[in-house]
Image 1 (cartoon, rainbow, N blue to C red):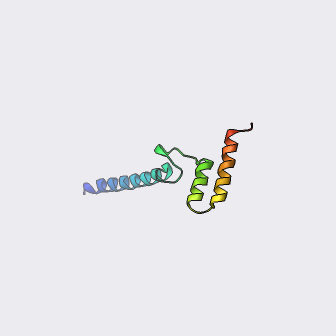
Image 2 (cartoon, rainbow, N blue to C red):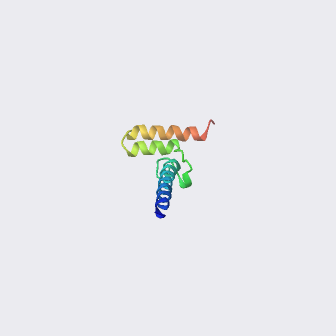
Image 3 (cartoon, rainbow, N blue to C red):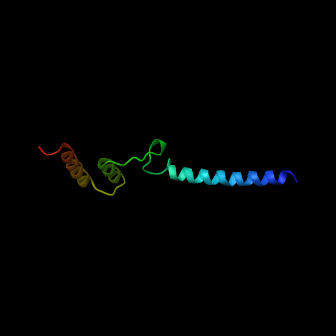
Length: 79
């Protein structure tokens, strides 16, 4: 009879631990897209987005090359 309260305390503690563990891992986003080390968000640069879209076949070579040149011109600024 003395162990029943300990069993309930252990069970409640296990449930609380599981909830904290599940919510912490989903909010930290360590394995989610766009997240870097330590849950710090990494925003893709326009070049990275362009590279990803070209690699996945969303855009063709001509569009990729033209857009890459526009981005390079934009990065260098007005002359």
